[in-house]
Length: 536
Ligand SMILES: C[S@@+](CC[C@H](N)C(=O)[O-])C[C@H]1O[C@@H](n2cnc3c(N)ncnc32)[C@H](O)[C@@H]1O
Image (cartoon, rainbow, N blue to C red; front, side, top):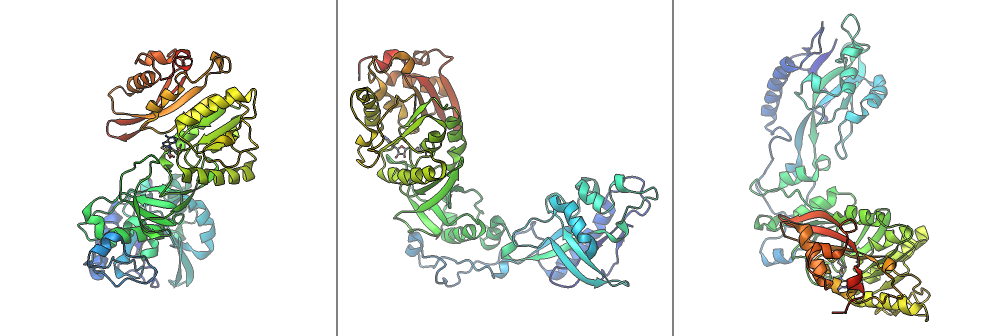
């Protein structure tokens, strides 16, 4: 017979329920509903909660008055803004009683000998909480003294109080609720000893998600920040609201503690800007200089691993999919020139796909990391960049075009780049077939460097490269807008048609960076009139 009973709290041995098991459908002919039992259980739960004087977990926030315990050495250093105020930043104390939480879950109780098989059957629907056991062994209970255990079930798919019909099939089968396993007598295979019960867990800090932990330590008036981005091993928040100011360090400490791959949590304190597209940030928790100095991160994207200084070079994990899409569009016949390569997330995977890939960036720090990333990538895959330069994209285009021209008769090499380093053994052997410009603020203007840059002998029309240029547009018709601006920069009449046959010009809305503002990708082959026309 299937029974539904109240469980005991994890830390205490299970005591017999004062009200006894609640019978649950002894002679079932249709799939049972739990509603009657739920009513009883709800009453029991209310009584239990009242006696414990603790709010039901996941429904109510536990907000004790905010206090500022003395800072503990090594937890973090005080932030600049915190220093300005008299109060020390609050610290994270996992033993803080505010984290103690009661959580009701559904559990399958069964003889201990049956737990292995049941765990296998229920594996997709067991409780998934950090540092929390899925199985709880209970002391011998009842007349036969048999040892029983509980398999705790997933909170989302097996919520206490849910209709039996809505439980996952494997759970229904395990406890004999499924019509398919019910025998002719209405009983199930081994259901006499397998019960579905509610069980109250006492959770501490370790078992809470970051959001749950923050709910419990932030004052009720303070919104729990839920959004953050990652840049490899760095999580970055954008806490702008004054309400978070006093709590930003504890927010950082909880995130650092709860996100296993994160080594540093920072808060963005300035806008993305400057030629290198970086922003000011403050380290809230973890490794790295608090407001200045290199802030190292490691990321893996599209099978390539990168190291970079997040404070002084550009990285945006959100562009990973777009970068993959672009690299996937290259073929083994292509020679790729990434003019604004950052630390290499387009150029390095392109080196694997294409015949050759060249990379350039204006930021010397980015180029330094690019070199390291290229060397590591080469060691791992055997693919390496054909040339690395540290110069303005315009100069790089001129150089690459010229080097191609002169390479027919001289020994010009990509090592002529402004960084003056390495690559001396890497003569330019290829005309580039694909140029990439991911500098959306100004790439369309930079396009003018392709105007009149090509001589027809070295670059016959069929050899003119494709340009893949990213740009922002706030226009209602962003395709027409970037098409017109690109044509104008190339010295053509400012219409999208001027870029070539519409079948060869491609536009993609990459993402909305703000309401009404799109990041666009425009791909087209340099039109002959622009390539061989007068330089600006
Ligand atoms: C938006 S980031 C893109 C970096 C890289 N492509 C990526 O996806 O991570 C733009 C890059 O262009 C570089 N940059 C800015 N102005 C430049 C210029 N005039 N010439 C070459 N690179 C430039 C910046 O240093 C930065 O690394």
